[in-house]
Amino acid sequence: DHGDLGYDRGYIQGHSSGTDGYLSGGITQPGNNYDRIQKFSFSSSVTASTDHGTLSRSTFMAAGWSTPSGYGYTGAGAWGTGTGIDKWSFSNNTTAAEVGSFTTIKKSAASCGSTTQGFYCGGNDGGNYPDYWVATSFKFDYASNVASEDHGDLTALKSGCSGTSSATHGFVSSGYHL
Image (cartoon, rainbow, N blue to C red; front, side, top):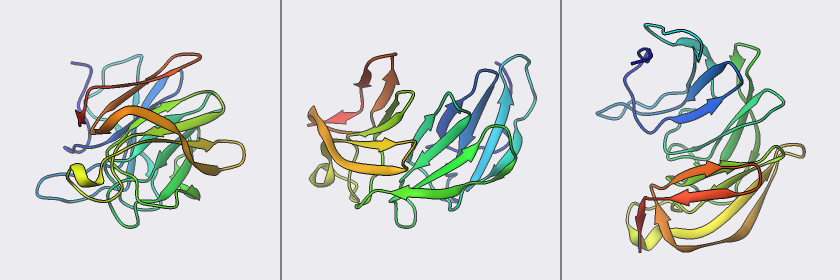
């Protein structure tokens, strides 16, 4: 046990700098959506994370990316339009700015990232069941804030999956699949 979150919520997005972890968005039961960004230290146990700022909108089931240049990105999700991509600084406690968007709703997918791009893999495009699941991967360029559609396909339709990144590859695992 490293500490407790300041808010009890699920479907949150995780981000990290070299020294701190960050959580953005999320939902509680029976369905209160959050727009908060929380920060916690890797070096010491804390009893609660601290507020670090807010997203431009409440969201959950979104993608989360971190860059070596000190920014967190929270993309798409299951609230509101579900297409926007927010950018926020690790060094400043501030409100995130929407810097880009996907052309269609994206939620419940795996997020992977490189030093220059974030990837949103699988998930679904607005519905809750297999009819809406997708195998498509989408790329978001950090420098230009441009999301490109269809970067490639997964081997199966997947929703609720997890993403992990190495220096050269992104990996999508688990989740529901057809």
